Length: 398
Image 1 (cartoon, rainbow, N blue to C red):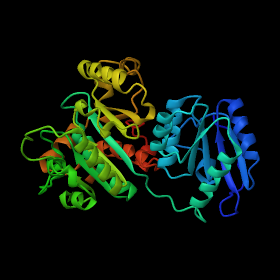
Image 2: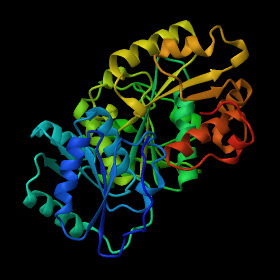
Image 3: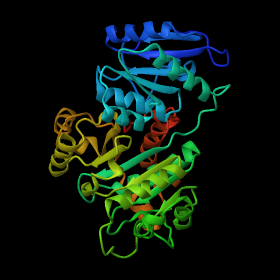
Image 4: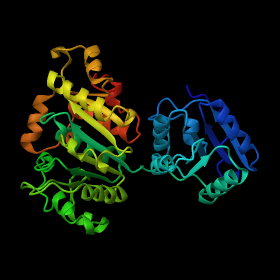
């Protein structure tokens, strides 16, 4: 468990407040000694990584200018720590390692680390790194804004309800966060996002992917439809695509989208063939949609074991059409089949789902157990506390 001592806020005082996170005491103490020789810094040591990356300790969110993280104790989890702190805009992140590894440095820089320090630390290196932090540091901590995040919805097989969940999650995300949100339908060759939302867009993802070489923010904006909820949509084409888009075209589309929007939600259908694209970048959160059936659980087991075993909290397992009293398996067997507990359970609300599909009215525009469950997913994704529905006792949430 992360243990910390609450101290006065150093913001605006001219003092640089540093949280030093290092499970290895010898390396952490070596860094602490190097920092002690730097004027104008206050260092607070943490002997373990944060246990819950979705709910970081208040101290890390409110009182810290710099978070300095040890990479060598657990590189994969350290990556998640760096990515979580960086994406939330909490503080400047620096990392340290005993390895002078260029690939490791690039990986963590992409996650948001601003400095990569190699042990043993030379005094000039740490002083220079802190000087650069001080130059970038604002006079006062800015108000917290949405970090730019990518959410990918993938089904373990066709017919699992990926589009319904992805489309309504995107609406809930736009409404709850009040930040710019884009939904991209990559359920090619034909996707149903537009039908689910009741819109008839003029352009589609095909237009973006076929002209990826000239795709920029302005071009992308011209292709988007806007739903009445405030959600922006890049729909799939109404006709079969003639060719699969090259991976670099998809990468370009996602890069431009993430520059322009706070949140990008992608309906990927069951297209695991896009595994090598930026769609499944380490920074993306993947929602794996399954139902409680032999075929679905078998597919989920293979996907998690072979492709997502090391993804940690960036993989969220969602059990759709969940009806506890009608299950053939108990929770223990489901967890064993999935190799991990499912984070979300969407209730089997057939009447609501059918009615909204027939009327092309999104579930999120009404109140139901289905909309409540999806809203909880969206609120958690954008860092908001549980809404009142959860407190009243719905049984389908995290």
